[in-house]
Length: 127
Image 1 (cartoon, rainbow, N blue to C red):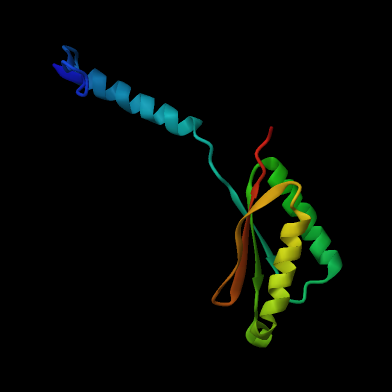
Image 2 (image 1 turned 180 degrees about the vertical axis):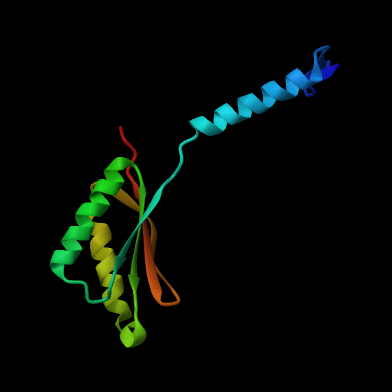
């Protein structure tokens, strides 16, 4: 005897093979997991003094990633004493986010963690 829905009044029970019931429950949960959308995060790395051509090149890649449906996590990595140019890195990331405004939306504004400054951009929902 297996209790099917305990919240119903009166509770619903059924006499079945318990192992078969457990097997079917596992099968249903596995099927639900397989249909769930998996989020992919692509990373793009900049230096604090990234030039315009490199910026445009990485911007093109980020646009492709966002149109595919992946999230983009761009970061500026500061080496050695380059941490002095925090403002420059933040400006670079904000410019990057502004350039991707038509294909993505900013999830997380620039945030400094150790020697890296991150920004997260998610693809815009398709209509």
